[in-house]
Image 1 (cartoon, rainbow, N blue to C red):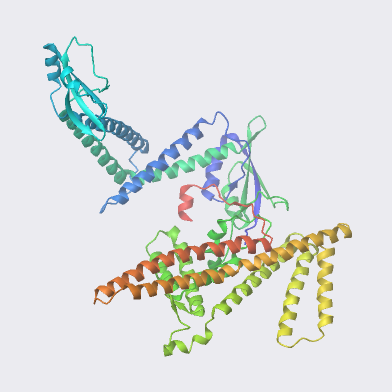
Image 2: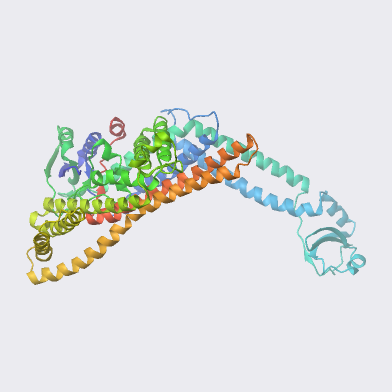
Length: 612
C-alpha cells in the first residue's frame, strides 16, 4: 500500500534557517519539494562539492578493488584524526606520477625496440669516428629495394632483417653529400644498455607508486567512506537551499516538503521551540508530485524491488506489489520447473543470507522463497535435475505420479493461470476506479468482468452437463454487460458517443485479451525447455563418460556439474525475466496501472540514517 502523505509549508526567519534544517534532518521525515529552477550561477560551493563527490566515488571504488585483490588484508577502521582532503591530494599526485611514468615507459619501450635492431654499442664512438673525418648513418628499406652497389659505393653493411625490411649502416666521409635512396633512421640518445637501465628505474618507481596506493587503500578506505557520507549530507543541505523561496525582502524563507502521516509527530516534535511557522495540508486529487512510500507485509515487501525496476505507482492509485507477488512466485517456479534446481537455489540462498550485508538479506530471502516455489512446481511438473519423474519406475515415486502434470495439462494450466491473473487484474482495476472516482466510473470494467466470468461459468456448466435455461442466462449476461460496456464507458457523455467509444474499446479488448492470454504460454514453454536441457545433459553425461573405472565417473560428474550449472543460469535468467514481463505488461495493463511516482527520499542526517 501507499502511505498517506501531507504537504507541509514552512516559513522561517533567514537567520535561523540553517538551524531549522539541522533539526528536520535529525528528524529525517521531510521530503523536500524540488523547484524547477536549476542551479544558479553563484552556487559555486555546491558545484565544488559535486565535483569532490565524483572524485571520492571513483577513489573509493579503486581503493575497494585494491583491498579485494590483496589476500589476508582488510581495511583499517575509521580514524577521525585523518584529513580526507590530504588523502585525496596525495592520491591525485600519485595518479599524476603514475601517468607520467606510464608515458615515459611507453616511449622507452619504443626506443628499446628500435635500438634492439642495431644492437648495444657505445654512442660516443660515433662522435669519435666523426672527429676522424668519417660518419656512420643508419638506414632501412625493403629487401627488393636494396642495391648491392651500395656495399662498395657507401661501404654499406647489413645489420638485420625484419620481415621484408633490411636495416643497414653506411660508412662515408664527413664531407660526402651522396646517400643511398633509403629511409634514414634516427638513433636514440642513449645506448641499449642505458635505455634498459632507465626502464628498470621507471618500472621500480611505478611499482613503488602502486604499493603506496595499495597502502593508502588499506589505511584510508573507511576514512574516505565517512568523508563521502558527510559530504552527501552537506550536498543535501545545499540542495535544500536551492529549493527555497525568499520572501519579505529576503528576510523570510519559504520551504515545502512532504511528510508521511505516520511520521507527522516526529516533524512536530522537531519544530518545537523553533522560530518557524508551518502548516500541513492533504494533497489534491490531481496532485501527482506526491512522493511514494510503500508499506507492505514482510512477504510482499520482498517483491518491492521488482516493482521498482519498472516504476513507482502514483500517489492516487493502488500499490500492485501485494497483488502480483504470489503470481510472480508461482510463475518463476513454473518457468524454472525443476524441483532439484529449486532446492539448490533455496539452500544456497539461505546459506548466503548468513554471509551477505544486511542490505542484501532481503534479496537472499526472496531467492529462497522463489527456490521453494520452484521446488513445489518442479514436483508438480515431475522434473528433478532433468529426470522425468513421470517415467521412472521407483515404487515410492509411482504412488505420487497421479499428482504430477503431463505436457498437455501444463499447457492448459499456463492458460488458466493467465486467465486468472488477467481477470484478477481487472478486478483490481475496478476497485481502484471506485476508490478514486466512484462506482459509476468502474461500471465498464465490471461489465467486462460479468461477460468474461459469466461466459466461463456457462462454458464449464455446459461441459459438466449442468446447463439449465441457457438462453435466459446468456441473454441476462450479454444484456447486463452490454449496457455497462456501451453506455457507461464514459459517464456524463452523450450516449451515442459512448456507444462509438464502446465499439472501439471492444475491438481493443478482444484483440488485447487474446494476445495477453497467449503470452502466458511462455510459462509452459520455458518450463519444458529447462527440463529438456536437463535431460540432455544427463544423457550426455551417461554416453560420454566411457567405461574406464573412476575416470568415467569423474567425467560424468564433471559434465553433470557444468551442464546443470549452465542450465540453472540460463533457465533461472528466463524464469526471472519472463514473469516480470507478464507482470509489467499483461497484469499492469489490465490492472490499469499508471505509474509515474517518485520515491520518498527525506532529508536526513547520517546519524538519523544509522539509527533507522
